Length: 405
Ligand code: GCU
Image 1 (spheres, rainbow, N blue to C red):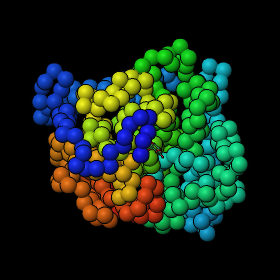
Image 2 (image 1 turned 135 degrees about the vertical axis):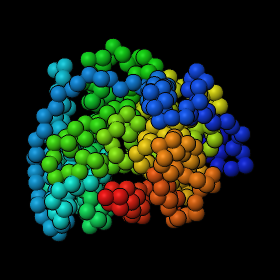
Image 3 (image 1 turned 60 degrees about the vertical axis):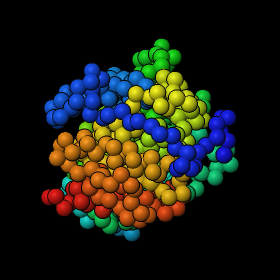
Image 4 (image 1 turned 90 degrees about the horizontal axis):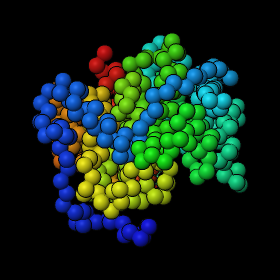
């Protein structure tokens, strides 16, 4: 395949020899041997590297928000779940952003409900065949011209609510366009537009872009969930597929309230190691969607070997919280092996905490999941999020939130 004049490599034998920067070596050359040094020196250094070079800097300005439950159905999923639709209305600098959160809560669990939190791609209505779901303003802005994405349940296969609810977990999902419409020319309608530096700072190389805003938005979802009495505040599980897998890792790196982070098929700029130059490369991912990454990343187009960091360092920023990487066998664009290796090379930081990362430098076989403090599976099939993925995520979550109680 040719893309942006670049031939895409899918041959393992053509992966260049590369050297990964040591996750435990500080910029001044000091070898980190304690949790204290990791947390005091190295962790902040790495957060700064990813802010400066890859995702841009998340502004600290507070954006006031109001919450309003707009619909509730206590008999969803054949009486098994309560479905609640909540408006999160952000207001600042004379601008308003209305976003819609869909909650699905198991009726059988009365308190301490562990929650999966994740964006959907095609609207809350796409996650379930139910005509009571409200369409958000931003979804209406970017919807397909032929309205093919208006159909309730068009992506229900990605949201296995029955399985999740039966296992006693809840879900909070929002359409990712609500926080930042993923279409050229709609930045005015993103959460970034509420901030005082919108426009004045946008030319800066480290100015945040869509992935940064989606990450910020998932933290705002947590702000709301923290106000809900029935939820377990120590079991907020962030899950993201593909471009949202990239955003999930970045959100988890910045916000410790995510007790677990799952990146599914996240690929380039997500879990996959850039220096392998396999499948989608930095020049491609930061050009096909120029509004995803900070402009500073452009300096590394075709120069992955010059990058002073790689994605194992991003995964390491979750430590000591459990982190899970999901790959798919035929998803070569996302480099499944590179996704595994990044998780593997994050392991030394988990070891520092006495946790167990990935022990084997070779990925496991298809459908042979690993559930340590770092988890991983390779699913059969193509780039997608399906019931098998949820089955593994639930097992991993049980291992950490249930078996340890
Ligand atoms: C494109 C892009 C990937 C991304 C994917 C998705 O394929 O190249 O980097 O992960 O879209 O989000 O679906």
